[in-house]
Image (cartoon, rainbow, N blue to C red; front, side, top):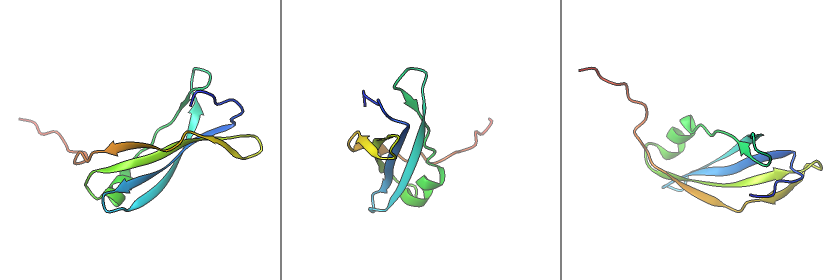
Length: 96
């Protein structure tokens, strides 16, 4: 979203969606980046992934939302989608 003017908070609002239709909501608060108007954040899928997707592929549906000083969500990016592929989780390395 190129214009974040007036934002006092920037969040990502979204859902982790499994192929069965199960949905879990998440919100990630972003921190200001080093470039004016840029923001950074991390979503750790961890238990969300195992609980909703149960070891299969799924999707993240999300939008960027800007909050102003009046505590109003005054601008959103529109919904975006990312496909999530199950990688089998963490596996220890085996020495030969």
